[in-house]
Length: 98
Image 1 (cartoon, rainbow, N blue to C red):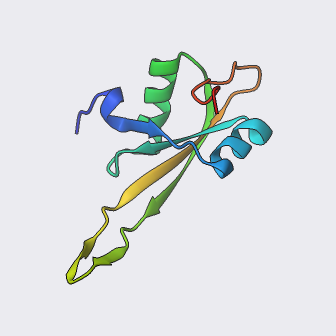
Image 2 (cartoon, one colour):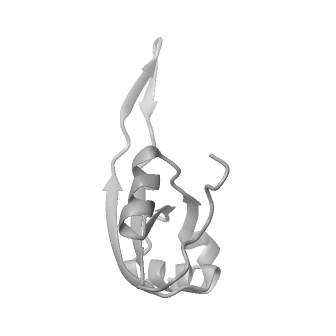
Image 3 (tube, one colour):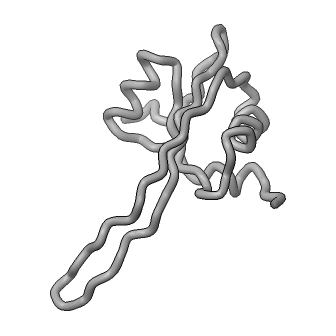
């Protein structure tokens, strides 16, 4: 299935854990398309941000059941990718003003 780089990477994950990993392990965290493979994620990050990627780890999160009064439903499933940049690469800056 052909999907563009901007459909693979949805948004950066800006949390305390994500920013900690960014500083200590030279790794950035993104929400990605659930159908995206590690190879597609690696190529998308390299093409969009013009950096070399050393490795990609992914985690799939299943949507939680939620209620609001009598209404009930599920949050959507989503996928997170930890992208480790190659040694010597400049860090991607997306959370400078926090």
